[in-house]
Length: 429
Image (cartoon, rainbow, N blue to C red):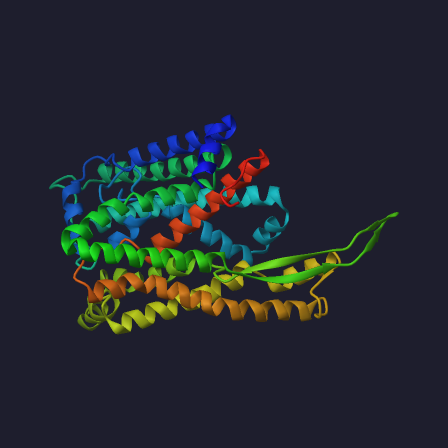
C-alpha cells in the first residue's frame, strides 16, 4: 500500500489531483475555525461539553467537524446537502417528473443535481435560522444556552448570521463539487471524512486523560475489531448470476455472455442511522415547545436518556426499519428485471419478468436482515460502552465509523483504478 502511495505521487496528473484535494480540505478546515460575528462561542462550547458525546448538539457537530462548537461560517457543515440528497432520492420514487429525469441518464442527473442544490440552500436557510433561535431559547433539552450577549439579538444580527452560515454551506457544496471534478474521490464524502477524522485526536486524548492508559489501549483494540467487522460487512455482497442469450441486431449476431448483479449486504449505508437519530430527536424538539410535565418526563427518561433500555430497543428497531425502507427505495427489483428482459438477460433457473423480480426481492430481503442488525449493533455500541464505562468519549461511533471506512474504501479504489490505468501496481497485488 505504501508503494502504491509513492507511485501515486510519481504520476504528475494524479499528484496534482491529490494536492488539489488536500488544498480544498485545508480551506474547508480553515473555514471551520472562523466564527460568525456577534455570538459568544465560549457559552456554546461549555454547553457541548456538558451534553457529552451523545447529545443532540454533538450529533449535528459530527458532520461539521467541530465547526458548530465554534459557531463557524461552515458551522452547518455538509448536513443540509446530505438531507437534500436524501429528500430528492425519496421524491424520485414519488414524483413522476423526477422519475423520468432519473431515467434520462446524464442530462436528467444534472437536472436533479441542480434541484438538489436549490433544496440545499433552502434547508441551510431554515437550519441556520432554527439554530440562531435555538441558541437563544435557553431550552434545557437542547443545551439551555444563549450565545447572544445582552442587546445583540436583533433582526439585523440574525439576518447577518443566517446569511453567513447559508453562504458557508453553499461554498462547501461548491468545494465538494470541485473535488469531484478535479480531485480524487467523491467531494462531499471527502469533506465529511475530513470532518469526522478531525475529531479523533481530541476524543482519543479525552479518553486517555479520563480513563488512563489501560482503558485507552482496550478502546483502541475494540475500535480495531469494529473496523475489521465494518470492512467485512461493507464489502460483503450477494452476486446474482446473469446470462445473456445471443441476439440478432440488424445483420449482426451479438454474442451471449455472463455477468452478475451485486447485491450488497449493507445496501443502505449510513442513512438508516441518520434517519433513526432524526426521528428520536424529534420528540426532543417537540418538548422544547410543548411543556406538559408528563411529556417532558417521558422525553427525559426514555428518549434523551441513552442509558435507558427502552431507548436502546427503540433505536435499534428504528435502524432496522429504515434499513429495509431505504433499501426498498434504492433498489427496484421490478425495474431491474424489466431491464434484464429488455437486453436479453436472465437469471439461470428463473423465468424472466415478474418471477425474476420476486426472486431478487426475496434475496434482497434475506441479506438485508443481517445488514440491518449489523447497522443497529454499530449504532448502539457507543451507547452501550458509555453506559457501562466511566468515560465521556467513544470515538468509534456508528455514524462516524461507517462514513470514515466507507469513504476510505471508495477513495482507495479510485486511486487504485487510476494507478492501474497507468500500469502501476495498485493497493492490492
